[in-house]
Amino acid sequence: MLQAIERIETYTAAMTEAEFLASRLVQDAVIRNFEIIGEAAGNLQRVAPEIAAAHPEIPGHLPRGLRNFLVHVYWVRRCIQGLEYRDCRPAQS
Image 1 (cartoon, rainbow, N blue to C red):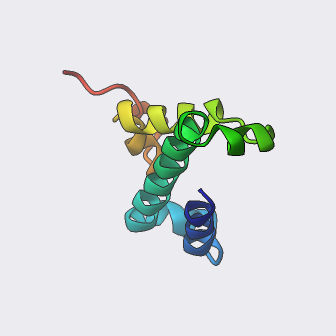
Image 2: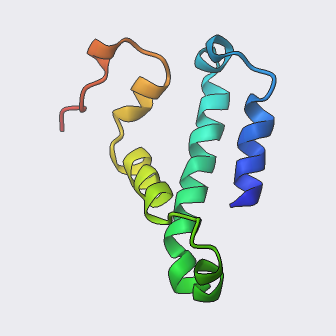
């Protein structure tokens, strides 16, 4: 989780919001690392309950929820990538 957080910070540290929104490459990298954080946080209780118990400040359900949102709500990626609100609607199946 810490490595993914550090990667997000590294990728975005020198960027303005406009630069971030203009770079799909950086957006994809940031989204991927949020997915990694969410997966790790969601598995923490099962894989390492002693670490989860020692760090109650880690709200495992929040990053896991964000991960699920990013992974399963595909149309959100278009919204995150800076398109106008009218373009931010679920894709038709």
